[in-house]
Length: 88
Image 1 (cartoon, helix red, strand yellow):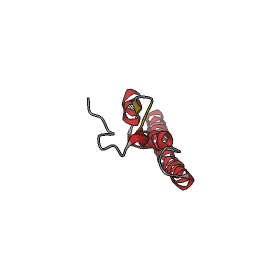
Image 2: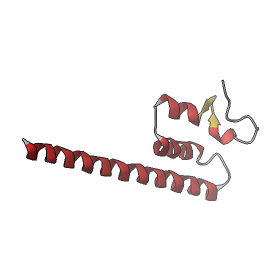
Image 3: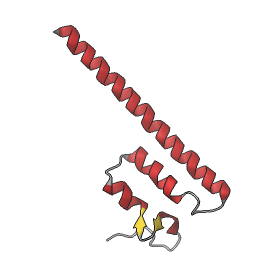
């Protein structure tokens, strides 16, 4: 099994024997959600308060990106359904 914390400097990605990537893969998260989870899980475990706030801001940015993508996809799905209804 590949261990992310191979260099001894990445302990902030491993807690209680679990790594962020294990959680991300177990839930089948996409890039944006996976990165949000990664930054949330490492928040407070790397650096000081400034780093914790930066991690939460990064997580928020990825969540915002995913929300916008889902809204856009939903709008496209609704448009396709309306167009299909117009054809019937």
